Length: 457
Ligand code: TRP
Image 1 (cartoon, rainbow, N blue to C red):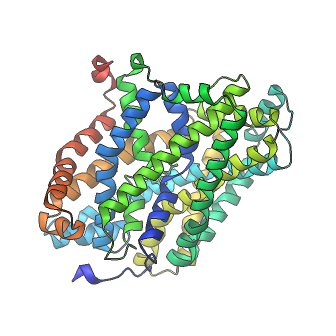
Image 2: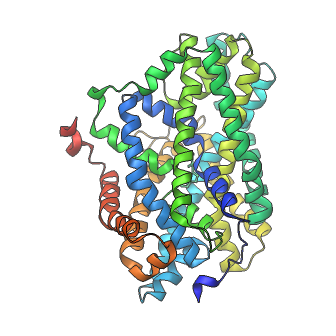
Image 3: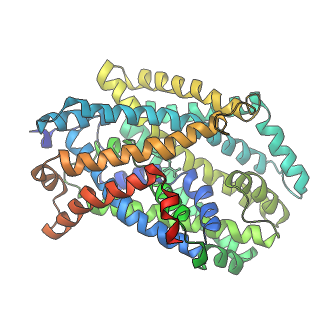
């Protein structure tokens, strides 16, 4: 019986470790520098409300679906999706959906690891006092020189890829779980320290207002789509990362409450990140609405550099980003590594080596797109931007749509009801949402119907 089998990759040592690992995956660069920026752009409190709705309506149901498929299939997303489909008398080609997820993971990690490298470099720079009392021009010039150097970016990209593959190579218990066990609590601790610093030395009221005061004039189709897309990316959905983590979940853990906890924690971190960042920006009279890259790597180093205690707290901010990016990165590549182990009988070390080599090579494209190749664009986008756009706006929503259809229509009621073990009302709610509402919302994202939605604004 499929239900009683374990995974060949091992299991989390318990419910808490799964929840921590999934939070580690979910809490990433997306929460800390993208969410606050998007909220600022799209009307503060209104965006936050739409985002909460998106997490509840799209995020949680799909997260439940991914964990459920993973735990029932017990393998890499490719194998889980294939095995369960065949068990339902459906096509083995559903495995291709897992294959698309693996490909998406390679693409996402290739650029995520470049930015991850920046966070490591900036943690060290801030710690060494580079930005203390530095002028605005000096901080911008330092950033431009940094991204203008292929050698610097390639070195930090290499370092971050090695850090990621080092953890993944050590396996579920010795690698993924251990990383989450230490880094996720540390991450919360650092974030609370930073919010405390912002409350004590920043313009907390201004930051709070900017983030939460609802500006209803800014509700637009674009805001809704941005919230849907961000909720999806932030919860690590649509490519099988959470599905792979679900495959290592012990049988006796209830899936829905665990998914809910992960979603709540991820959202809380995003909100706290805004409360840590904006008061510091306002206290220094800086512009809060710059793009997320400029916010994290120019405005914040500058702001911290002007403040007493800024070297320590600025360093903590970048260490926070490093931990967030690192525990996310390992989940982005886990489906690929699990697949290499299952399909080619590789050891985890060898599989990590190959996957890391692929990520590294692809990532060089993103490295160069900030300097040598910055002139080469496709529809106005550099290589980095094309990869980001194709994955976030096309491949992840498509993956999410197909995962929802799979969980709601391919898997029989008996199978999903057995795996979820919910109350009848809870199960009926989830099933209706995943069959109708979620696919509809994913289609909206996919079709980018911002024009058609404009009447809402
Ligand atoms: N959720 C992470 C963030 O907010 C990124 C991430 C990790 C991710 N795993 C993923 C995104 C899987 C999409 C799919 O930065």
